[in-house]
Length: 196
Image (cartoon, rainbow, N blue to C red; front, side):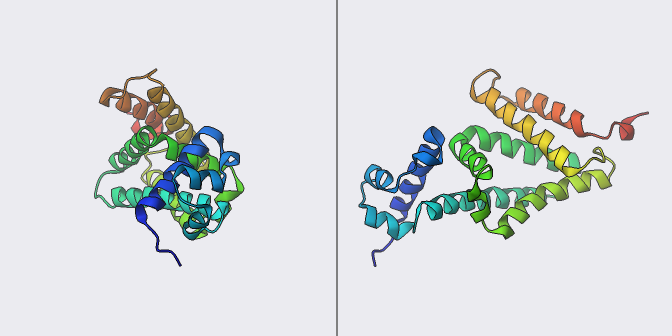
């Protein structure tokens, strides 16, 4: 059996992400990827058993990295709003600096490939955000709405903010990040809590 080379594995992953960004999953052809990274198709199958294995492995690894970063941020002993903002800023930065990976994950979530990601990872990723929202509701800081509504609203804010910054409709600076965060915060905060 051939020994795996981490640089080749990384090249395969990067090429796959680029193809999905440009053409979607239909554009992923194992022979084409092998040719682009200058390996034989049989060598490619040493790294990944199939197209399904390739896509689900990439998605799993991206989500593991995102989840680990979020867990680290939430362990910080910060007030709720600052923890919430730390997660917000992470996703803005990730979306801008890793647009192809973010597009990849968004496409995976809308496809049968999402079911191939380990359930434990999908549950953990969801639990991190849902637990954070529950914490805010318990403290009376955010609206006592269903988490599906809250997370959908926040996701829409994030997606549009990243898109506007990426297309240069908004500048990437601290003021923009703060303004967009403030708008999202105003949309979910429990205004009754803040009335005098």
